[in-house]
Length: 408
Image (tube, rainbow, N blue to C red; front, side):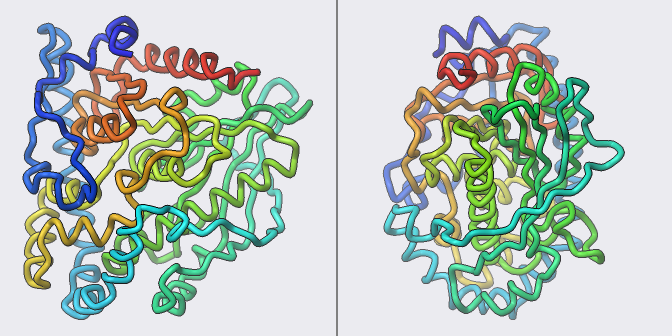
């Protein structure tokens, strides 16, 4: 893997500067160092590449501050309110006990319902196949109920989130191996993600494409919510657990639908929060042929501890509630990919990460890489948004798909 990395990327894995081993023993939420969010993300690179990495990292810090400021104003007053914190403090044991089992089936229940999937015309800006294929929107009424019975009544009131959405690109001649893509936080437009990840390029290689919309994003967002993804983090800390469970549940129903149309091979890739979700799916869904998180987050608590000005607010709120970082990780561990072993062998796992990423820092990818038994890993010299040398990692992704015979 490391030899391959040195060939296909100007940033090789062995140039990562942090020498200590990241992977903690289970339970990871206790043994991962409390200062993990302070670990440096240094690479030993040639001058040109180093300047590319540091320049893009500086841009990411500016974007991160803007996003964190927006979240601080819009989400945290509700999530960290004394009433909400008191409620979450009392209910946290429900999720901690499920996380303690390290059994994903205890939290991520397999859907048993049959849903009616509706087809809709694609939008004006959406991809238009030029080979006789078609692009359409898919939707169904989600039967998901929160895992915690106490949360069901309030969660059900979020009516716009009840309808699951995805965009489907089909060649139309026969069921094809399908690449399922999951977008990132606040980045839900289909046209944006199709261009960002060069999905038309993969489509032209013969794959069908499914772009999945996460809960509280896109058409699932309520009209008065200020941005896509607001509902993920604006209803309390424990609500995040249920939002991830919902994301996994509806994705599996779309997998059921694809199977019903004759699709035999499906794999998942996702970016940022979508990368996090795809990594969770790798521990839950054995029907997947591959999982390729792109610039993934791994521990949401540690990420928030690094984002200014969110970090001091989160730390203060948790301190007021009497919760330290270990306890906070434990509370969210039930939906973290580090809690569970992947169902896929490491030959079917691949991570893509930016050396200059400061929204989902490289340390998160390294931690997931070690948890996944040092699977295939590709570094590029860019940040969370600017994926410099993208052509190289796209070719590496395509080679990966050929290596696992996903194209057959």
